[in-house]
Length: 59
Image (cartoon, rainbow, N blue to C red; front, side, top):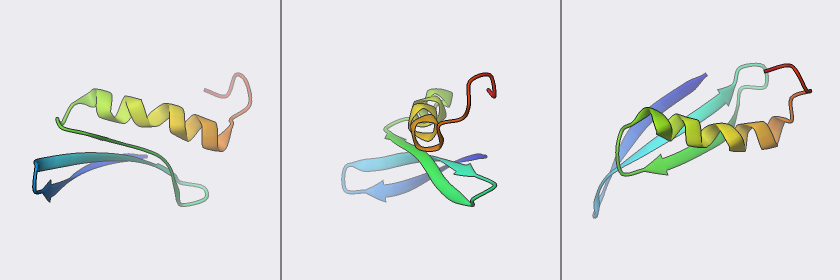
């Protein structure tokens, strides 16, 4: 599951995307960016895949 939120900083808004493993209920990937775009979540996906290492063919 993924979610995007935003945080106000001195430099402006910072958007944060997080990927949650629903089985373990842990954040397994995240990314930050200056704009709210779909690519923000896509940048978090490689981190999640590195952390969970799904077997070949699962995704």
